Image (cartoon, rainbow, N blue to C red; front, side):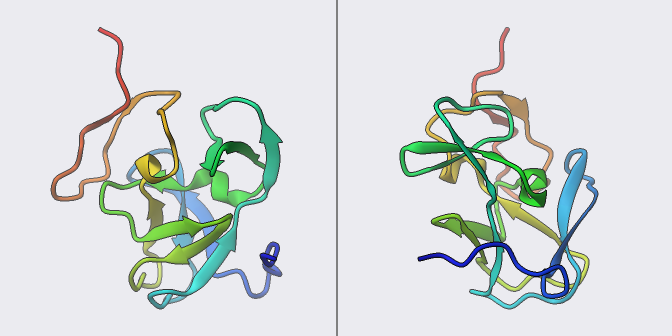
Length: 129
């Protein structure tokens, strides 16, 4: 069984404005590779939404701060179940990112990616026009 949300004192993450898009999730301290750094809180829904994340064959609409996770084509974190783990070390004040294509069958709200990673896909999903 997965552990639920961290206590506020132990939570290594916080929401701040992001250069990628809107708000993002940032490290309040250095995070080590493989460290469990969060848990995706939310309710199960029957369809994808702008903020939902797909876990297996269910969509979860977030209720916690992890709804602010931004995409990176070279993400430094990943979900294992609903727990978030660091794929590599994340420095103090580094933005924590996931690869949306690792969790979604289809991008329900296509968008231009501004992650800045080498090899950035530039667009996720099928933009109209």
